[in-house]
Image (cartoon, helix red, strand yellow):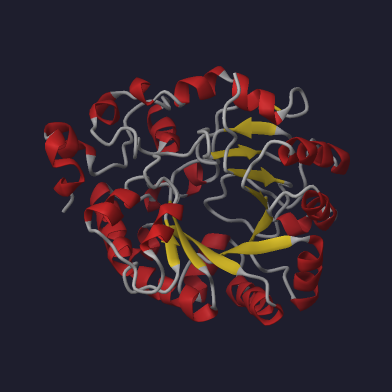
Length: 363
C-alpha cells in the first residue's frame, strides 16, 4: 500500500564529531563509525529520496562537516532536486566554508546554541571555548548570506535563560528559534537524566514560549513537545510580525507526534539503520538491505505507530489523541512502550477527566 512520504528526513551522515555533547542522541565520538554508508551508498539513498517526494532533507551527525565528502553528497542531492539543509555545531564554519556550502546547494543551516553564555554552552557541549567558535560560524553565515536558525535544548540549567537565548537568536539574525524539549535518549540517558524538565517546569516553559511568540519577530518551534501547539491555539496566539498561518509550520501543529507519520518525520543513521525519530530509536530496517520507501511502507512498527486509536493510558483516552498524541520517543524511553502515555505531558490528567474542556484546561 502506498503511504504518503514524510515531509522531513534526517540523515546522520557521520558519527564523528569534534565536540562531546552531554545529550547527543547519536552517541557521536571523535572517529567515524566503521560501518557508515559510503559516498556511493549515500548517493543511492538520495536517488530513492529524490523520487519519493519528501519536502526536506536534513544532513546532520555527529558533526556533518567532519565528513570529507559532505558537500559532494549535498551537491548530488541538489542535482536531484532534494531541498537540503545542514545541522551543525557551527565551530567548523568560516566564510570560505559558507561559500562552498552555498555552491553545493545548502539552503540553510541549523546551528546548535545551548546557553546564553559561554559557561552554560561549553559545559553542555563538552569542550571549553566553543561558544566563541560557534558564534564565529554564525557570523560567517550572516556575512555571506546563508540563512540559519538556532537549535537550543531546554533543560533545567537553561530554564532561567530562555528569554536571553531567544533574544540571542533574534539579535544574531536567525530566521527561526528551535527549542528542543530534552528527552533522555541516546547519550542523554546516561548524562542528562537530572536535566529533564518536571511536568510543572515543562508547562511553564511552554506557556512562556507560546506567549513570547506574539512579540517575537521569528518563528519559535519546539520539537519533542506536541503539547506546545495546543497552547498556541488555546491562547489564540497571533504573532505581530508575520501571518498567523505560519504557525502551522510548527512541528506537530494539528498533526501530533511526527515520528514515522505520513507528512511527518523519519531518520536514517550513519550506518543506514532507519528510526521513526531521533528520539524514538526503534530500528525499522536498514537502507542497505531494503530501500527507504520499502521500510516506510512495510514496517509493522510504523503501521502500529500510525494508528492513534492504539495509544494507551491517558494518551489513548485523551481528546487530543489525534492532534497531539504525546511524544512517542519519551514514552518509549521512560516506559519501554512506544504506545504508552507520554510521561512528560502535563495536560492529560485534566483532559482525561473532562474531555469537553479540551485544551482550555491548561493553566
